[in-house]
Image (cartoon, each protein chain N blue to C red):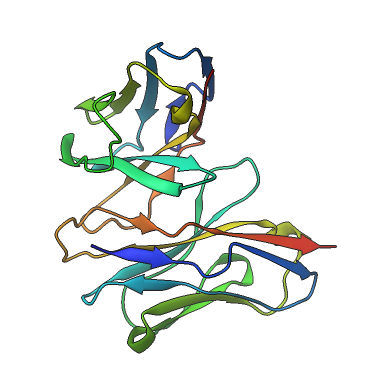
Length: 114
Length: 116
């Protein structure tokens, strides 16, 4: 079975550019999560969706960040404009069922903003 | 709001040594508890989980964890570590009846380095 698929795996961009990260969750999973991992802060939850509806976006750092889930098989995380402090690994994860059972993580997107 | 504390930032052990990684959470209600592992350059994978029942949970690769409700703890143990256990370990908590049921809160992680 295919796991959670993220793209791109690596992205290097310049400050001010728009960045779009993509995620395809496991088929049948009704929860989708976006996490950011940095050395300083560890794993931070940015936003999560249930049945394509954003439930909690309190972790989104600021208005430069936005996330969408237009259908059950696709989600995007957009940063516009990007800044060097956004450099991190962004993980997408999905799960099935209520109460956040086991999360299945993608390989992550490593973002470097110069 | 829930929070998770992992006491050790970096643990260095020799092969065959015993391991115990501490994890405490703050939430007074019912919780689901997890340990995830992240091998170098890879994504997080589930090691073990506790939802209810026997507080001693056995996971993959010889790991186990004990839920002690009175101490709000869920420590991870392994009797004898191997070099291949070198990884970062994350404790996580979810409050299924809390205000944000889908949310899984992670600790900051503990890096384990096992010397061959």
